Length: 299
Image 1 (tube, rainbow, N blue to C red):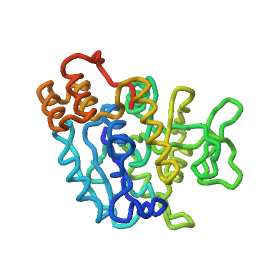
Image 2: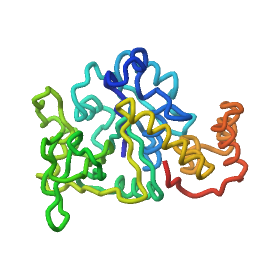
Image 3: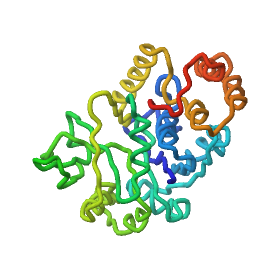
């Protein structure tokens, strides 16, 4: 399976912060926002990843992350000339996807929870159809909303409904089988001129192969698209890290525990970050001061 991070959009709701840089490069507490969705794909076992961004910002992502080799992954880059909808990612990334299953995560979404790694790997292992995640929110009218019948079976998905059928929003993380590019080509622009991801999901629903997995207690989903939500995300990450004494979304740690980089490479990464808490954490992992697990289950 391959992965795409969509880090486009103008970020106008965060002006003037984003007048000269992508919102996905802004800090969320102690690391760039892009680290959080990147770690999610890596936790799912995906090590071939395409980053799609604007002509202005794509170079900044390349300078930050390079070719991905220091994280034990392969990173590619693609320009999105204009933000024409989330489903456009699969058309722009057709050559990268190359007929394989593909996951998409939005570059301004943060996921956290105990057992998240297992949940992601299970979704990545689904060989047929699509898997998306539903999360209970107080303001479902801002999102794509899932409607369930009395047996909790999905019966509809509606984009930003005026009268939501439920409080379950579809998060910015999607897993699709090898048909995703062809399905994306069937999506037609909405009234606002975009290729909506909800319409793509609806094609899988009509096909009978859409799975909506709800993220319940113990999970957190944060969409950092507004000034308040960006601030709250930073506070959330700070609170979690202070409470457990360990950082989250540490991409080199995920790579090491996946067996994608060696201990020597982990030490080199820790030293590269100098005396920062992030770098010290990598050295602690390398020196077995933190219990090693086969897979990282939190991000």
